[in-house]
Image 1 (cartoon, helix red, strand yellow):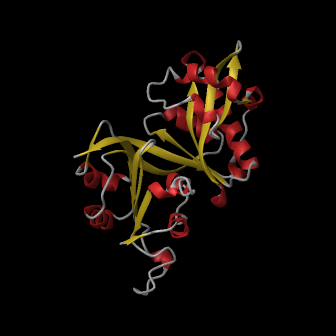
Image 2: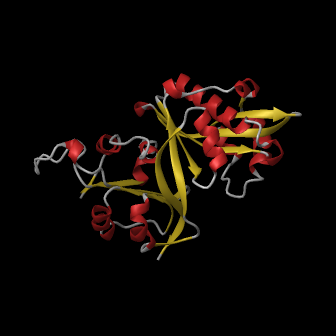
Image 3: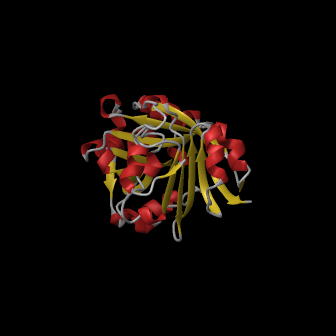
Length: 268
């Protein structure tokens, strides 16, 4: 086990699987790095001492983000035997949102009492797979002047963490209006520009307008915009139980990458 102590080392390791490690890759900037810790089971470019090539090594790692204002996050991916050894020696945040592969569930439930823990499907798309539905003609870029309209829409979603300040912080939004009111939105929250990676979340459609292709349209429009800005891959998460949303993302070119378990927990 190695603690990767600088952003270049961390990035080299995380690039082993950019869609899986999307959130950590997008949290390596100078503002975030002081709150990041990453442990990996091997050197980023292979374990030369063991004489094993890089592509034969499991990419196991534990990523911890513990910010006094933004809160804690833990991600654990890879061989559960290796992760078990890592987690025995790693201090974890007292409160964190955790993402893990299902094989690591026993390890993390031994460290956290979860409010809820559910299967999440991670999906991703590259420019050559993106399909734009006709409804993208209804989509527009949303800006600071739309903050209150966005807040009103996100207010119907209890799990939303939307704040109007996000528009000043660089978050990007695409939406659709009906009668002057925003009824569908997609949000870009993170990006790793050096790695050509971006993350979409916060896709929401007002209940009365669901089933009309609006969620897929705002997601496709925002994805296309991120590709125009230089992204080479865009990632999003969707509940495994939400088959309608999965189908909508599939129709615009997104493909499944991995099933994760995710949820907020308090350390035991």
